[in-house]
Length: 239
Image 1 (tube, one colour):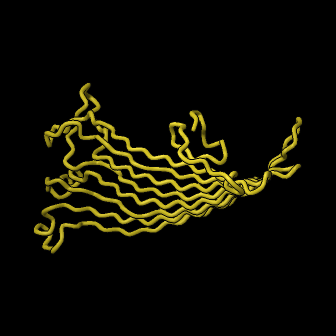
Image 2: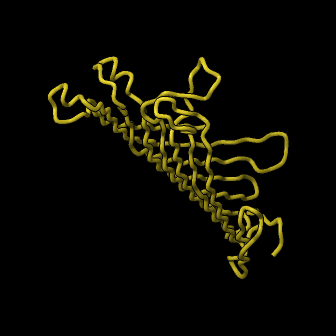
Image 3: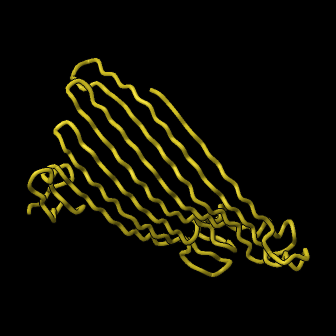
């Protein structure tokens, strides 16, 4: 094995540091390459919550990985499959007082947005003599949960001051497909034509919970608001 071999060298399985671990030989394996990347990042917090007495509340963790498999069955055709996964887990936001030089905040409830993302993509490139044809198909699934502080509005409207969260959660699904054809010859004149289709669908579940409202209003629950919404956006374009 040798150093400095990267994903562009077909027939090599390598780590991000450039050290190949497996060399595949023989037949179609000579035109096959695999890359696997993983990461785990921790961000230390620097904001102190003076209301709860907690320090460095805005720390966060990001974990994920990417797998790419490239195959060139013929000299003028290549296929690239990609799978990406990532989890973002923040503990609290980086809010701080505007009129203070210190990084301090007085939130009663943590403000964060957790997300879980999965992306699957297939890209094909065909290069005959005169043109280059590219096709990209992608599906993305994202699960998100946002958590906010509703304590001050609850106190202003109902006179209740316990920590009151507002949450928004729900999945989103996005499918896209793009096809483009471009000139491949060298020269002053180049042309490109193509089209793209995108379909995005998202479901949002929102809840506002104010402790004490059940006794105040004579209900069995402290959930004062519950909403269920669905949105779908489709886009099409030619260029």
